[in-house]
Structure formats: structure tokens, C-alpha cells
Length: 375
Image 1 (spheres, rainbow, N blue to C red):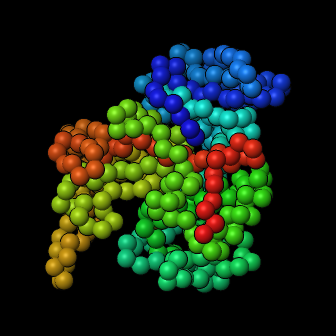
Image 2 (tube, rainbow, N blue to C red):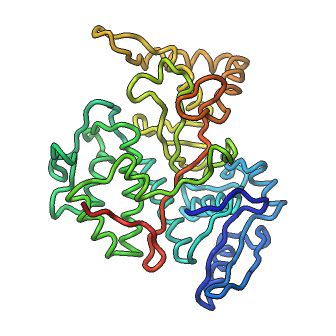
Image 3 (cartoon, helix red, strand yellow):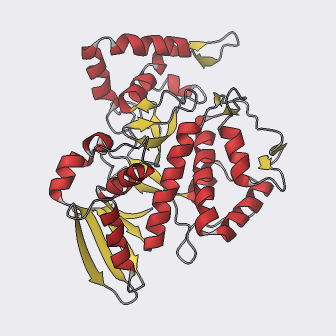
């Protein structure tokens, strides 16, 4: 989602180019029981009516005081396990609670954004992988490895099926090797592709061709598929997350951050105060658990037989368990870790919380800004 600089009002602005579009957006709020819980103002422009929506001050203080969205599910009594509409409501309310102003180019894009985030969350819950930083594998009946281009989808294999098979093993199935960064890319691409099948099939076909030629990854993935909001100068609140966001927890310990794969941790926010754990999908992280794990990476660091820095995950788990048994120590570590991270290359008094979040780009015909390189 595109965003302007932080404002006192925040929330979202939907550009409404059709006469009925503003009413349709307000009907969406009513469907989710948000009439009376939002402030809605209209401003006429030359080509569109701009509908600005945000939570009322009373609703913001009740549901997300100080823009803390990690307890929305609890405070709104949402049952996402049994009603998918409750998950969509959590997504919408988190957007309305935003401290920065999101500029949404149409009502259809707002619906697609909610759907993509829902898809990403569902995929995040189902994803189970093996963590490796130096090797990777994929199901051979869907993927092939190219020395120059990495893994690509086999011709004729639907992209959605290939992504599901690589990340969501059937009961007792093989777990494929991923880094956390690559895992978030596959989960996000899957969520986008599933929505493209409904709202923009021609773009899905282009994405299929792209992935049969070369999978977009790393920095280019960020540039093509995602928009970053917040900044180092204007950081987002430490407890503000929209379900479906991708974010990075930084390792603030200089020594252990030299281990490949332990510079930080890439995750997807699942809502309900939980973050993806691709290695133990039935144990998603809380914010506190993720901070404690990263803190104790410094205690799991050792040199292996080759003299290289490595991580002993068993030691990390033991240290986390011991810390949790000591409330005073837990509070002390969390006070340190739940600070904003320092700029890249700086180590001192910063924590592990990033100042920004990453959200999927727009995808609908006529308003989308997801442009594929088709290399």
C-alpha cells in the first residue's frame, strides 16, 4: 500500500472515480460492523472523490491505544478460527488505525488488498520448512534448478500449485530447505497469485511466464511486489502491524549477526499478536518470544570445527526458557529489545524492532502498480 508521511489523522483515503464507489466503501464498513466506529469525510477532486476513513478516537483508544494493533483480536472479540470475515475485519481495522495515511486508488484495490493479506496469513499458518542458509531444494515435479537463475517453475505447472507444494507439505510430507527471507517471498507471492486469479487473470498469466523464466527474489522482489511504509526518520510505533505485513527483526548483537542467516529474522505478521514460525508452524512467535530468541542468539554463538561462526539452537532454546522463568530478567531484556533498530552498520543501544513494514502492491486492472520485468 502506498502511504504519505505520518499525519495526526492517519487511516486510509480511497479514490472513488465512480458515482457509487464511495457508497460501496461505506457499505463495506457497515458489513464489518464499523459504522459509528469510523470517521468518514469526502473531498471532491477533478477526477475522483476522495473518501478519508479512520477510526473514531473512542474506537482507537478501545481497540488500538497508541496504535498498538497486537491485541485487536482480543479487544474486538474476533474468532478468526471459525469465521474468515473476522480475519478480514482485523485487517481492515488495523488499516483504519494506521498512524500514516494510506492512499488507496480504488474500492476494488481496497478489497484486493484485504484478500491478499488474508491469503498471505492463511499461507503463513500452513507453511512448514527446513531452515538452511547454504542450500535449498524444491519438489522436482514442479520446479527445476537453473545454475544462473535458481529455481524456476516447470512449464505447464500452475504457479499457485508449485508454490503450495514447495511450502505446504501434505501430512508427513517432505520439508524443503529455505532461508526465512526466501520463505516470506514464496508466501507473499502465493497470496498475490491467488488474488490475481480472481481480480486480474492476465497479470497472473504474466507472473506464470515470469516464474517459468526466472523467479523474482531478494531486492528485486521487494521492488516489484512490495511497498515499504514508515521510515528511519519517522518510525512506525513498535506495536503497530497490519496482518499480512512483512517485516524484519534485526539482531542488535554485532558478533552473532556475523553468522549467515542470523543478521535478523524475516517474518509475516499473522494478526492476533503472532508472527510466522516457518520451522515450527504450530508454534507461531509472539512479539516477546521473537525478541527473546534474537537476544539469545549471542549466547548460542560458537565456532565449529572449521573455525567458522555457527549457531547452537539448543542453547538458544534453553536460554529463552530460563529467561521466561525469571519475570524480572524477561522484562529487562524486552525493554532493551523492543526499541527501534539502529541504522545498518550501527550497534550500540538499539533494539530489534524495525522502523518500517512492507505491504503488497496494487494489483487491479487500471490501478495496479505491480510491474513484472519478464526477464
